[in-house]
Amino acid sequence: MSSPGSNLTIRPLQDTDIGGITSLDEKVSGEYRPDVWETRAGYYLRRDPETSAVAELDDRVVGFMLGEVRSGEFGLEEATGWIEVMAVDPAMRGRSIGRLLAEHVLEHFKAQGAKTVRTLVDDEMEGIAQFFTALGFAPATLRPFVKRL
Ligand SMILES: CC(C)(COP(=O)(O)OP(=O)(O)OC[C@H]1O[C@@H](n2cnc3c(N)ncnc32)[C@H](O)[C@@H]1OP(=O)(O)O)[C@@H](O)C(=O)NCCC(=O)NCCS
Image (cartoon, rainbow, N blue to C red; front, side, top):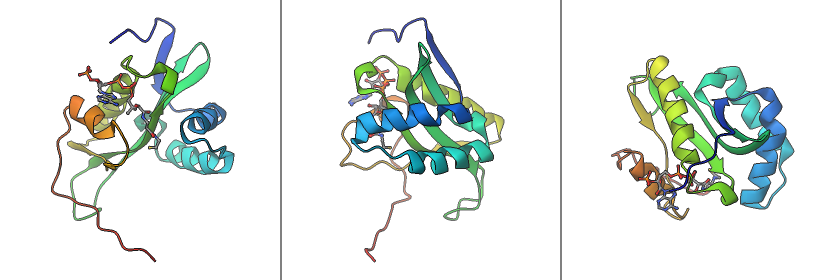
């Protein structure tokens, strides 16, 4: 695995990142969704910018991970860090950027009192389960149930 480069910065989310996150999401998803990211990033900024992270290389957003600490949901009373959305620029993958983003986010989850970190993995999304496994995550007993409305 190659090094991400010395100009890489991993830092808390800022409101000025919304444009960069929108561009990166467009690269990954093929959709330009500025309103979605305005709302979504706005939510995490209001909750706690420290528990979300951005990877910046030469003033460009090349990765992000959004999460927060919550408790009382799904019968889980203890404070839990939730990783909810992330992406690394396809051209920059395999260089530890995802791992560095997770390290930042997990450190801040801990600082907010979380003892556990959780996420949901869609098996249809290639590589996500392997990524979290490489980071020490293991499958949990909490399973998503779904019903179409
Ligand atoms: C998952 C993702 C964040 C990984 O980012 P990355 O910067 O390439 O990951 P890293 O280089 O930090 O890899 C960390 C570890 O995970 C493993 N890993 C990462 N991607 C992997 C893959 N596709 N298959 C197998 N293992 C993988 C690496 O091998 C590495 O393990 P190691 O440290 O033991 O060698 C990135 O592939 C991504 O953005 N995927 C798309 C996510 C997406 O669709 N988001 C939008 C909706 S949520």
